[in-house]
Length: 64
Image (tube, rainbow, N blue to C red; front, side, top):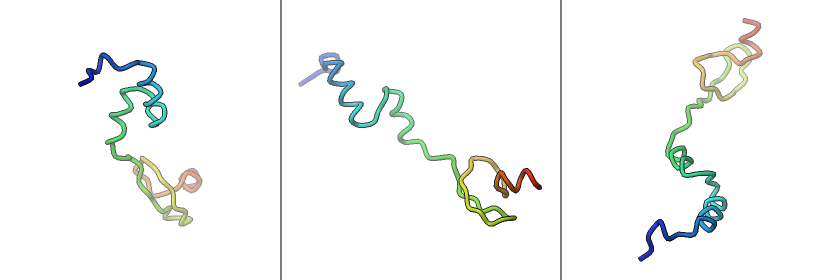
């Protein structure tokens, strides 16, 4: 049986790189749900994603 401290650090870095992980802290992000929601602008009808509580796209919000 292999212990974690016996794993070659270079091999571990290569493996994480192939899996798309930058560092161990990246594991916490994987299970997190996206805070973005899809919204349709009430003025022009454009559909966009945002994390803000708004009913208008940036362009219409500035005109509004």
